[in-house]
Amino acid sequence: MIETRLGRRPLMLLIVLLSMFGPLSTDMYLSGLPVMIRDFGTTESVMNMSLYLFMLVLSFSILLLGPISDKYGRRKVLTCSMAVYTAANVACCFTDDVWVFIALRMAQAAGGGGAMTAAFALIKDCFDGNDRSRVLSVTAAIGILGPILAPVIGTALINAAGWRSTFWFPAGVSTVCLALGSLLPGYLPADRYQGSMLGSLTCLAAVTRDSNFVLFMLMMCTFTGSQLAYIAVSSYVYQDGFGLSTTEYSLVLASSCIIGLVIARALSHANVSPRKMVACLFCLGTLSLAMMLVLASHHWALFMLSIVPCCAVTITARSFGYGILMGQHEGDNGSVSSVLNFTTFMFAFVGMVISSSFPPHLFIYGVATMLAISCGVFLTGWTAIRKRGYPLKGME
Image (cartoon, rainbow, N blue to C red):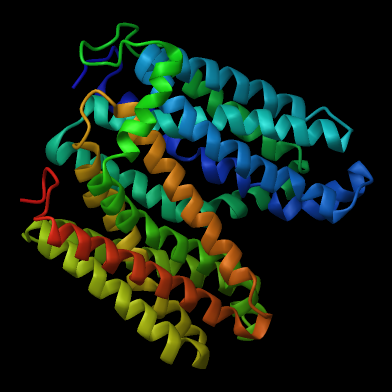
């Protein structure tokens, strides 16, 4: 664990802000896309490139910048990433060319990946034990609530000042992160990776060669895909399918996550062993799948309640599960952070694709399909780990 010139609260603020970069960058401007298409004089297919090319660059930025930060230190990588991210956001506010805008979105993703990687690496660097679990719980809550709150904030900004304001806002947030990040220690811990820059990238391979780590990571990340599968189609199911208004939809969406947070908090305070916690997570995931298949299509309230156990699993997995995973590879904090974030992001992407590929009247079963996949991945991974005698630190 390292000391910083930041106090405990400013450090927590930095980690919280860095954890928000995903929804800040991808969800805030969604409601402004129709206006942006007219302003740029382009088509939906071209405009959507600003979304999926952002996702592509972000995922690989997350993957690569972790081991580089292990080699050169958190402060250098974070400040450079924040400078790139801030500049790209400001430039997005002034461009009138859609292709330049798309290129700037890719630059924004490269910087945003550094932010998301740094958030998890700093948690491992600066916290341990119960403190680490508590901080992970906070970031887990942000991961759930962020995609819900960001479009609401973005819509308010667009109505007040136009779509360009949704890029000024994250530019302001990243400027704060740049200032706080400059106060991180410049020295490098004794156990950091000391090879070449190219060699630092091989740290990723060292982490992914640990099959026990990979199995448990897949278990802890997979239900994120189910959560994002639900969010991706929820507006169509609630508003077009069940006839809820936009306001009612927002309240229902928030309610499912809040109830999930309450359940997750109760689990985190339960005095159960790590193995029993894993069993609880699987039971909750299976319950969510059963409810989605049998009950969800009958009423909007049942659809909402069907995803609540999945929300609880996702939040608990990010605190309990990520805490265990971060204790497996000392000295490779950035690599662990990168692989974890990359895997989580890819599961989210897969979940959205799967649920959205179903016909509109079957969207609920698209979510159920992803839940079934998540349950299968979870059960397969846990069966393999049990056969190996629970070879993970923290699972004794």
